[in-house]
Image (cartoon, rainbow, N blue to C red; front, side):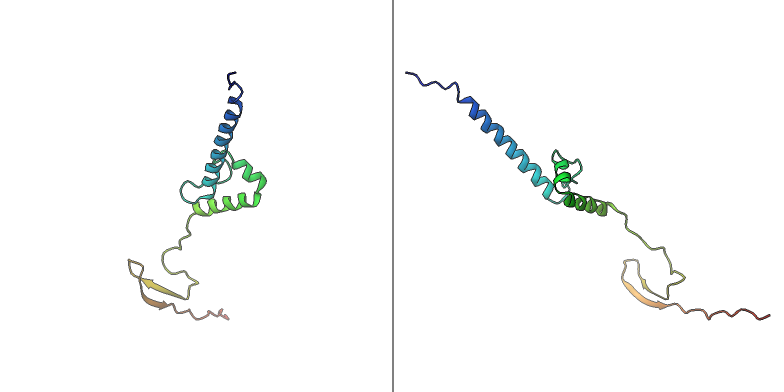
Amino acid sequence: MPFDLGWIWIPVVALVALGVIVVTVWVFNRDLTSGGPRSTTGGGGNMFGGLAEVFDPGAHRAELEKERMRHQAVATPAPGPRPDQRARVVTDKFGNPVSFVVNPRPAPSTPDAG
């Protein structure tokens, strides 16, 4: 009596499909949690981005804030002393401190009596 293997393909296909799904989820989860240039926000950077937004909104907002802070511009002060600045550090062209300058305050002006 020969052994019939016609039904064995169903669990084999199911196990292969389950293995592909598990590997895909693991790869995308690793991509979401790793830092560096491949790190994406939870918005739409990968196929599970929407799930992170729905099931963990705090982490999604934190990831968006981190991305916003990474791309924000650096505020640079205007060159020269500010009028309200009392003292400043003078640096050379390499940024090393050279001296310290104290700007004298002008005497308070009194209105003329007339």
